[in-house]
Image (tube, rainbow, N blue to C red; front, side, top):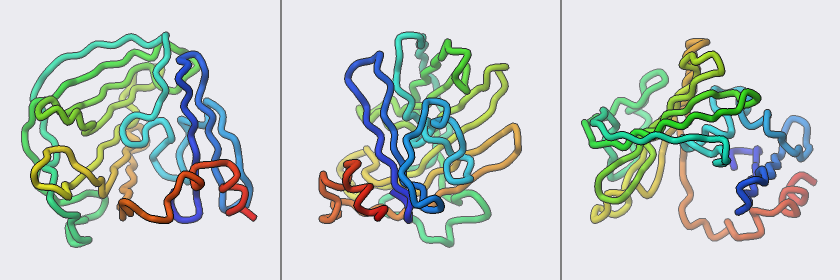
Length: 207
């Protein structure tokens, strides 16, 4: 949820059954069911789309083929607290970066009706965290179209895995435009009960 916007995405165990996605659109004051093509449309006028959020939200399907390799990659250092707004300059966080061993997962979508022909995902290799650092997305002509990356920090110094993400950068390289999402997380919010993640709750809030 973000501001007045809310979305529920239902993922089924059946690999052949598409997700059900519902969102509350504040401008329309209506709940709308999203189609498969909607999931690669810009979200709320930004450069983010639903299937790119947190690097990968697209449902895996039998058409896809996968390749994996290893390399080293420049990625943001995970901090131990969220940086202040002084760290933000234009559309980027001014933080330290480091070279990490990375799994590089290449996914061929093999679906001419889908927005992307290929996706490349960069995943942390060590410490068994498998944190998704960033993703690259290519259109059906093979052009580098969109990318996204996120930044996190640890609440526990004993673990490598970032427990909270504080920002995302989504870029559209064909239009030369990007969106920075500065996030204020609410971990363990007592008001975030299972009821919140239901269609009935969305309807209740819309009224």
